[in-house]
Length: 237
Length: 237
DNA sequence: CCAGCCATGTGGTCGGACCACTACGGTCAG
DNA sequence: CTGACCGTAGTGGTCCGACCACATGGCTGG
Image (cartoon, rainbow over all chains, first blue to last red; front, side, top):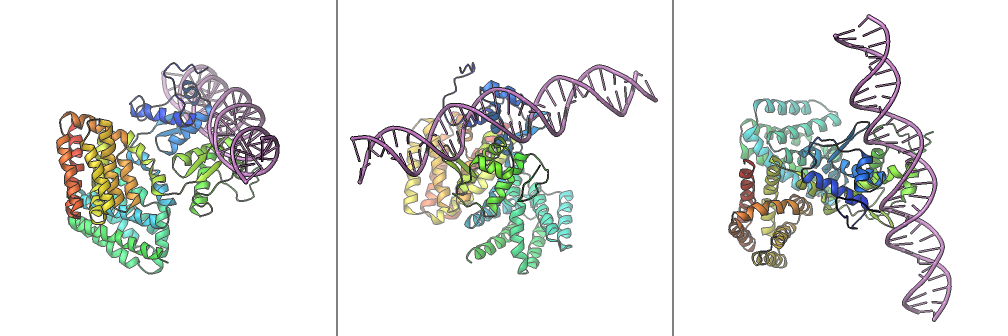
């Protein structure tokens, strides 16, 4: 009954899993270009000889991975496959990690963020620098935790963007998910560590302004390192 | 008609998307522990007031993200939520990235791998060192590309493991996916760059043996940097 | 007491129906 | 001729019910 002319699909795993691999392969081989529209769910299911339900699960899976994008009433499209698309799911890692894993996550962030900040110091333009300053002053001029977190995030995002490596910026973005940030800031702020954070941010900004990579690297590493150490002590309790 | 006693679910996005968020929230809030078994698909669907089909799509999505694990005939379980579970999907990024993105990926890997190797030099044990040596000699003693890649991967994996940061090791694992490695090695080997790679691996091993972090960092950075530069020139053609 | 079988419950797959939305084209007033 | 409006075909989104494949635990028979 399996009259699939293309190739004989051997039994391995679920049909949905196979469908996921097939579509991934099609993209990897270049048979599906970024932005391109796929056949309809019904056609795709027919092509692979599976039911529409199973095909939908495969599509949903690739959707959450940032590979495909489904537009209701229009069709299914391949994303641009840019760093941001594919690494968006990285945020769930930070959201669901706890305990020692959070420290490891911060350690990775410290390594990447310090390098990114160093690169940014060498490459940042006047416009980008102005943007960084904007978030810095905005962060210092409000008491609303929500707003502080938002500007803190944007501050580092601008710097990561100035480093010129979109992939690194996307990873850092995921590493500093909103919920993760919020969890830290809550307890962090309670012990009046905000003033120190402010100084650290100022130091980073100063290094960027001076286009001094090594100073920037040190300042960023110290900044993340502080949070890292704080979290480490929190875990001991 | 929406008699969901727990809470009034406002209309936002698809029901499947909402189900995904709900389950993720349950885990984040600790209402679902790692390893714990979830209610059946049918029960879950009833609880959230959606159909089993939609619930299955949500489960499938969380499965590919490494958050849930479905065991046919047994039930659905929360994974251990360890770094490896959640970062397994990271491999698709390397598989689907092309062109300039690959260089960026390698740049990230260079940063992380050099730091990981430096940490490993300080912390590696005799047993781990022996394991590293095993893969090093095995890699030099065969001509089968498949085997070479496998041992090359294992070589770096052992080092990353010795660094003591599971999260970093998992990210590096994803960054050096099998298909990515294969693509590079193919063209890489054609121009007889294997001898150089051999020397670079030896240098890394030497630094580990001497427990010299700085030498290890430099050797690892140079090693990845070579591949990076090679890829960069490839892209210009 | 133990090995093997079998009923039950679970995830996996299927097919079809209908809904919600988009996109496109034709229609009709201006 | 131009433009806004509207209808329709086609798409993804949701639901339902049935059946299959597999794992588990208890029961049966030795």
